[in-house]
Image (cartoon, rainbow, N blue to C red; front, top):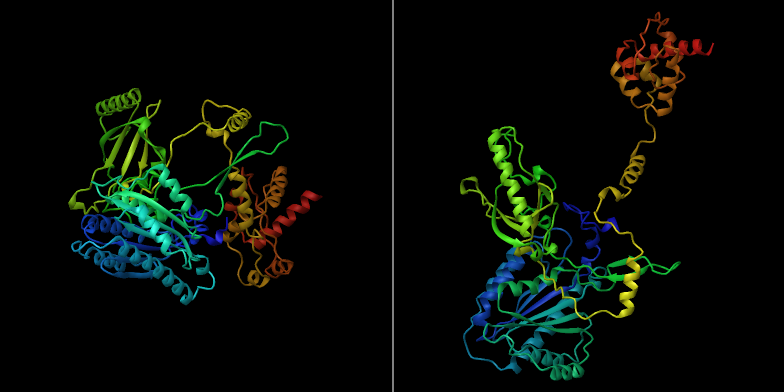
Length: 570
């Protein structure tokens, strides 16, 4: 991982270091909205609401840029470019005005033919590609970063999707599609005509064989006419779209001796948008690292204790119906209170209630869905609140985990287990798993990450090369070393000098290990006069006490210590 690619100024740059190397490869986005009557009258409000919600979110995201450029076209009675290619981040006001302009297109009028609509869609695709080329050519960084960015065109239509795909393939077969990475046609079904465009398997197979090879991927996606469904189509833009290399290698021990591990190559996909990427967002449950972070902020005196967080149970969940992929953050252990300010009877009654909650949830295999109680209007609440899942445990405790909300959920297709794998694959994997030890209980004490060794090695690299500083001789002549300076110098001595001082103290004398003075110190001390008479020093139990009880200057004590050394050597 290259730390130089880590985004600066991010609150969780460490967790984004991996994604920062992938998101710069995200393609630019061109959105073409078909606003033809009479279907536009039914889909306009839903589509504009979904687009407004999505842009409000993506413009506020911190971290690496997930959508480098965005362009918006509208196909009504004529083709119109509502938004040329612009950067998404920091342009919420401009993007919001484009959505309002799209919302103002009327949904009434005559019905245009599909041939005319397909011509307008084809022309909009070609214009978006031409506009993208011009943007890259005239960008100052176009010779470097922008040359690696392609464009993905998404067409939102209410017409039969298969016929639109076929007409676009016919109209674009002779066009220059070098910069087009993908063309996605999204058919929005109304409530009444859902499933009318489905074809038989034979017809689908025939269309696949007769499909034109455009050099770019052309996909068809059918969604219902709802805000959430269209939001999921747009939120797919926020996920990593590289696909050039696998993300993960899962290594299993080989069942055969002296063979390389069995490698299973995997891709990774984000399930949700972390609330940590939304700056200044109040209480979305992201801060569960400590109790102080979880408790609400108390306004007023700094000595005022925080008020308890109030979580209201809103639903009972089946334990097997909770997907772990929608839970995030660090869990908190919940236990019955032992607050000393409560009466003993109240503590005992509360303990019994907590015990009853634990046993009831565990016996019925239930979870509790909790919602933060909205603050009162008088406290100036923001109206944003988080949700949590409360899980029971075999002990007298509960586990609190934040759960993602609808706004931060990303599309994720998780197909069920289909047909059985081949017998060879089953035999290989089963043989790999038999090579591993089996544990009934996960014991974190058996997991060692070598963190201590890393911290020690890092501390040695950051440690100064010289543990103490030698003062120049002139400084000792002009100003003798004070007691505070002596203590500071002694605390910075190497371990070898400290051990030597302890060995010299075995004869009944305790020496203070101080920094050796320069050679000129001898002449300096002689010029200051004869050394004072030695005072009797009581034996002390540790080195720091001998330093703290000495009152003579450092230069005088240094000569005294030299006499002690001569006596010991003799």
